[in-house]
Image (cartoon, rainbow, N blue to C red; front, top):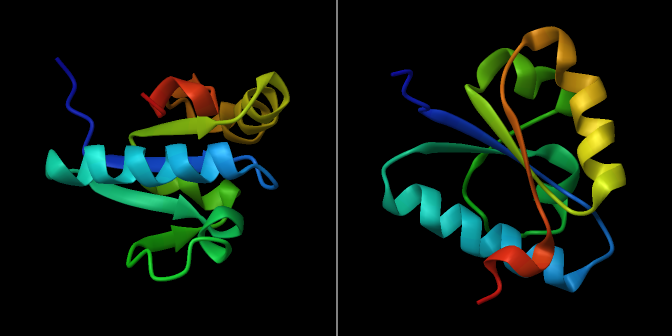
Length: 99
């Protein structure tokens, strides 16, 4: 079974629920000793995150999997940008990690 070690996170801007979810997801992944890389646009609105950042295009080169927090449009946009890299792209709504 393939092990995911480098996990990218992309988040939809403009939603406090998405930001809360990204924070929880980041903590969840770090607690499992995974390397988390934030897309640079979401990283800009999370001051003090302390993580590596990358452009969306480069996430496909350095990540084993990318998690997209947002809606259908966010997931489809990320999937289009990352399709040529042949990595799994997992979608999550902001509400999924809120509980």
